[in-house]
Every structure is written in structure tokens, then in C-alpha cells.
Image (tube, rainbow over all chains, first blue to last red; front, side):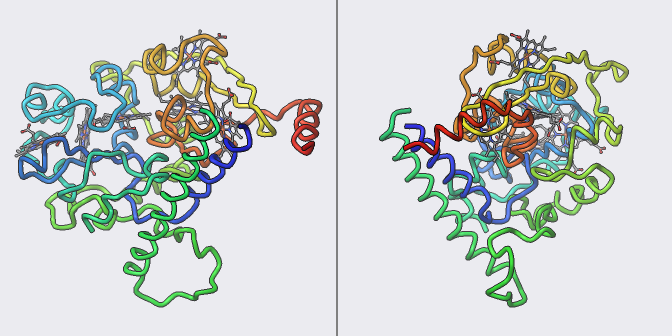
Length: 132
Length: 210
């Protein structure tokens, strides 16, 4: 039992050091619950950029973002009402929502996921074959 | 997990990694313009200068979109931060300690500082790996108690069964480590407490006996 668990663990590690298809900055989240269907590019949320300016607690406790890519079911209606991204992208704390292209910057067809994650690197990312 | 399911799992993983290498070879070939020495060192590792790709070439941003021309290049921002070994290749703990970054803790009150707790939890690890030290201090710099308790961890030492496989699948520590916080490849940052000499010898004696 212990031995086979170890083999599993080792092959997972092997898969991780091997080269990965070019991927975006670690922690970038692609959100595409609705965008493709609405004819917009999917949204790319950069964690690195925001964590330089805010602690995790601001978004994941105070603003109620769940720890799940795509799990918050964000829509434009919620954003203009000041929820989620709209708590800051309101023209006061940060630039406002008329800058569609800043958020909707992804390649169409990219599914919702968090880029560069262990899970993504272990399981072959099939979407890489679609887009580019 | 029982034995057959783990073996199946190992097989799946192996298949998955064949898939990864297959597609990335094709992509690497398409990306590189100059011919590469077939017998070079580090044939399988991505070259260092490909680690933090430009936004327009990172595979998820549309180079034809309006955003890519305006978005910041991560390399520019990371240049003034303290370097790390994995993930963003930034040591976020040191960058915060040395005040290279000053992330807000509260939107309404920019002066508010986090209430940190200095409490280390040592988790004894099966086998030869050093024990895991979980530091509340560094975590409460960034997070609130309710981010972890009780949804991810019951706040009681030893009450949460964990394993490395579980973490790699994105559970427990793996909710953040392997997504946003430093990744699982940095073993030493978690496995930081040497085992007492006696225990170590006992383990290695056990593992050589058939």
C-alpha cells in the first residue's frame, strides 16, 4: 500500500518537473462561465498584480470571493452594483468598467481555470490544443 | 485509497504526463527559431528566460486584444521584488518583510494592520522527509482565520488528516500552495524541521528490510 502510494507520488513529481507548454504567469485565473457565449473574450484575473497591492483577506474574506476559479459566478450586473471586481473597479479605487479590454483579454475558447497550478500541470491541459 | 485505485491513479498520471510532454515538444519546436543542440544540458527543463513570459505570448492573453498593449509585464513588476525559486519566482514572504510591497489589509482603512498569530504547528511526517512546520505568523500576514478555519482545517492540532498526494490534488495546503502561494515543488519551505536522529535511523532500517 505504502509502496504503491509512493510510486504514484513519484510519477506525479516526474510529471511536474517535465517541460510544460508555455503557460501564463502563476496564479492567473481565466474566467469563462459566460464570456464566450456572450461573444466577449474570457476574463483574465492576475493574482500577482493584485497581491502586490492587497492582502488575500481583502478579496477572499471581506469581498467574499470563494477559493474556486469560476466558482463566484461573476456577471457584469453584479460588477456594476459594486460586487466582486466592482468593489474596486468603480473609477475610485481603480479604473472603471468601461475598459472592457483590460479584463476581457483572454483567448476565446479558453476554459475557466487557474493557470500553472499543480493540478493543471499534472493532468494534461487539453485546451492547449484548441487555442494556440 | 486502496491498492488498486492507487495503481490506476499512477497509470492515469503517467498517461497524463505523456500527454504533456507530447504537446509541449510540438510547441517548443514551433516556438524556437534557432536550431537547438540535441545533446544540450537541461533538454527537458524550460529555459530560464521563458519563465515569466511576456503577456502577449503567455498562451492565455489574446495578442489581438486591446488589453495586452496596456497590461503590465510581470517581469517589470518583479524586478524590484525579492526573487524566489518557484511559482512567480518571487519570495512573497521576504518581499513583504522587507517592505518591497505594502499590500492593503483593508479597503476602508488603509492604516489597518493584520492581527498576526505566532503559533507553529509541527506535523510529523511518515517516512524520511523532514517534518512539516506550519507557521501561523506568515499566513495571518495575508489571510484571516476564517479563510482556513473551519472550512479547510479544523482548528485543532492533528485533527486534519493530510498527505502529499492530497496536497498535490489541490486539497488542504494545496488549496493555495500550487495555485497562488509558493508551489509544492519547494519541498523545503514546508518540510523544514529535521527529524530526531533516532527516528530517522528507525525509518531507514524499516525501509531496507524486505
